[in-house]
Image (cartoon, rainbow, N blue to C red; front, side):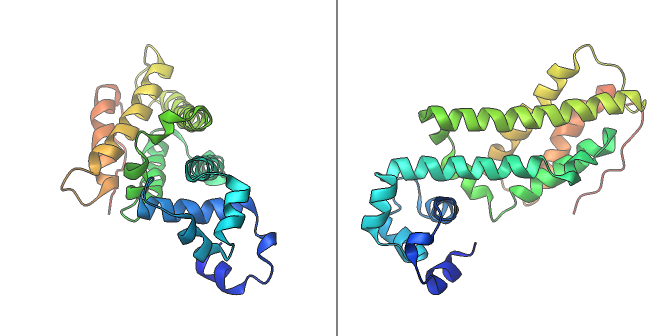
Length: 210
């Protein structure tokens, strides 16, 4: 829900759902910073008074963690879309990278960088992040197994370990990208993953990046 439309069109503020507030709060916190955002900023965007927000969410830190957890839920929902389930084999691995790249394009990369490390401070946030990473590993594992069955990749000793390597490399490369002078995150991720897969390749994937 667009925060500007919410603020302008909301006739009865008490009906604004916690979920909508958290998604709007996440945008504001990502822009302003974990420590610097204010209830007043969220109040202006949602149409709810600061007092009403305090009554619902108690503290800024609690609101911030809830907002981040809600965002991880949204990310998990995207991982379970039909588009992801249709990916197959070696080409599917690189298509999956393309989908990940779109989710952390230049407009959203700052979210990841600003929140780097904050998840580790909250047990619920850690659980959300761990679930997201596990889901990513599971998708990589399926695609690796399919690529082996399709005779696109050589058989590997431990497909689970390779999937974990790819998932860890993707997460690390996303954060690394934020500090480099590169412009194309999809190309960055594709290059890193391609390097890891080189020893296993039987056929060459048709890799295209913008």
